[in-house]
Image 1 (cartoon, helix red, strand yellow):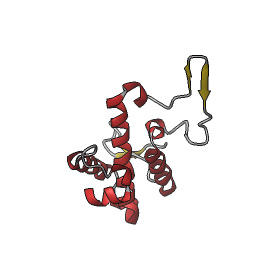
Image 2 (cartoon, helix red, strand yellow; image 1 turned 90 degrees about the vertical axis):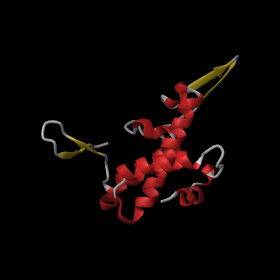
Image 3 (tube, helix red, strand yellow; image 1 turned 45 degrees about the vertical axis):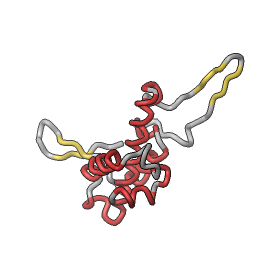
Image 4 (tube, helix red, strand yellow; image 1 turned 180 degrees about the vertical axis):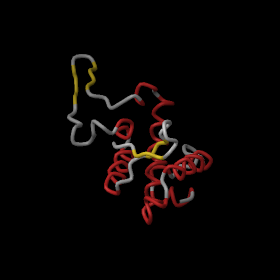
Length: 133
C-alpha cells in the first residue's frame, strides 16, 4: 500500500497539509514491518492501512493532549452537568491501546479472526513466540 492508496481507502486522511505524505509513508513503513504477508495474505494491505491509520490517530491525540492518548474517557463533568457512556460494546478490556481508535479496533478484530496475534522474540530461547491477546 502506498500513500495514494492509503488516502483512497481512508479518506479521513486525505488532507495532505494535516497529514503530510512523509508522515503517512513512515507510518506505512512501520506497519509493513508488523503486518506480514505470510500471515495476512490477500488482506495485508487492509491490515497495513488499519495499523497505520491507528498509529496516526493515537499519535495525533498524544500531540494535542497527552492525557487523551492514555485511554478512553469514562465520564466527564462540566459545571452541574455530566455525561457518561457505556463503551463496553465498542471496546475490549484486553485490547489496550487498540481501543483508542476505530482503526485499532478494526485491526485487532481482523487480526484475531485471522489468528494473527502479535509475535515477539523470547529472550530465553531467541525464537519467535506467540503472544495471545
